[in-house]
Amino acid sequence: MSSSDHSSDLVGRLLREKRARARARAAGEDEESQQLLVCAPMVRYSKLAFRLLCRRWGCDLCYSPMILADAFAASARARDSELTTSPSDRPLVVQLAAGRAEDFLGAAALLRGHCDGADLNCGCPQRWAWREGVGACLIHRPEFLRDLVRRAKRGGGAEGGGEGMATSVKIRVHEDGRETVELCRQGSEHPLEFATF
Image 1 (cartoon, helix red, strand yellow):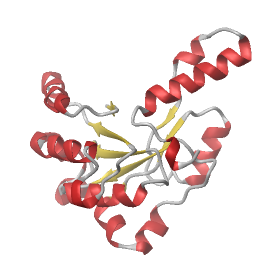
Image 2 (cartoon, rainbow, N blue to C red):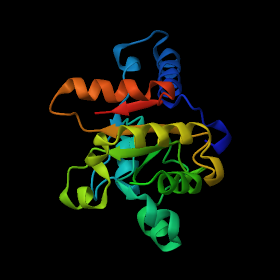
Image 3 (tube, rainbow, N blue to C red):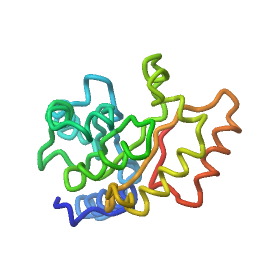
């Protein structure tokens, strides 16, 4: 898959491709063609070798482990250390931890052509993530999330952003589920391709 094949509707495109394969295989749709098998981001496990193994067993979409966007954007050494991929490692969503929109957009710009989407991690509950202002603490910053999604959808402005890539957010559900629904509603002006909970 070349970078020109990227669609902003990543999930829809994956489902269409899977249904087409199912039709070709069985001349009809089965229940499996209605579901995507997704390998979620897992600390220390979602590296290239594991993703390729998951794909071998039918995984449709894989995530990278969470990568700190500021370090990724600032350092070639961090990029080389944190993310390896290959042509057979597609579609791939790279999960980024960022407390500043510029960090997310800068990292997303560098990822363009190497993956199919950039995901903002708003779910990591670890104490160090809270101290750094990334992860689950971001669900309490809806204005930041709105701004980041708006800028990512417009191509990131001066930073370039991840134009041509899907933009998604992984969020932790609030203790009061209504707050989670409201958080998602607030972002509806610039909708995400998908969100994970």
